[in-house]
Image (cartoon, rainbow, N blue to C red; front, top):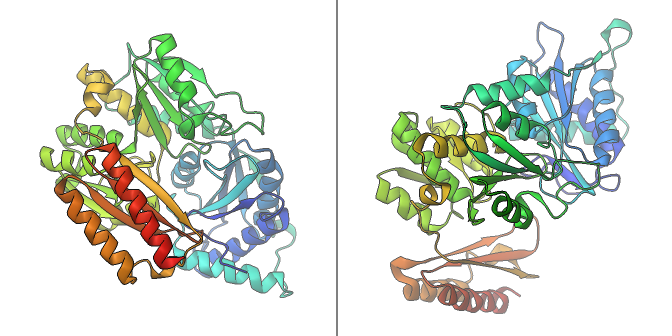
Length: 452
């Protein structure tokens, strides 16, 4: 059996890979590991548990709550809320643990479990490893030490979480959104209520799509992975901009008034300039991954803002930010972290701050996003190859060198082995889309020939 914890918790097809038994067992294991680590020392432990609207989240939530309570942890059930809301409430309520049930942008049949440590921060890898080891030991027969009587955990429905989180979002905005008409696509997910409410309280006129979750329609042809409906709605209603979330609302993409996509790189660029102007861009630095468009890097250079790049994954962005005290970071996919106000990517907060920038400057989103020119980017997945040799193959190295000579300073090449599949991702950027495609196809052929 492979490692249960991936880069974003434990995920799989609900009731096949991710069963009620697994959810219960991991929750009990988490409680025991945190107790052994001293997290619960001197007080009765408390956990915050939330979920997105997936049908499977109902039984998985019940399993997690049962596991925690059986291990002596009091549980606050906050219901359907975004991942960043669970992280925020874990911190603001002084809880010892947060648990979110969601598979983010994945299709409805999937689900996942993510644990947050005290303060709402991602659980350390070392603790995840210990939880997995403890779970495996007990699933093979080792008995648990179980509390009885008054020692068992109590379960409370915490309805105030919605209002507390929305108030937090609106309270950290630098200015109101009065006069803006905004379309919100909630992906029939965890932000279906939160995001429209937050934008409305901030003063915007709100039009909604994708805000009627039924447990089955999450991410189905809507949200940040399917912008077609949002583009059409923004144009139809003459809105100033549109905001799209994914299923657990830890990311945000946008469209301008003409329906053009504004991706995570462009959002980062707009926010970086705004935060520098406000004096909140600590160390004059923004953090992004190596997958960020070359146009973003050139835009930051042109604006005199330092850029630090990390491996792909918002966890690596967050680690870099926390290690060096940076305030802003994110990914092209729309995971944006504003560390002064959130401990994880927060799609609703990102959308609000982007809209606040439009409101305070009086400039349309298209003009603000025009600070960077998004260079054409081609991504090809090369399957069924030995991805472990991508960095050591002489043939691949020679092909990459030749591609880089051809592109010069106006483009770049990135080859990246997938973290979960037997494939290599070939990414090429160039000033011309046809050149990018031609170079990417040649590189993909070289990878297949050398590593297949």
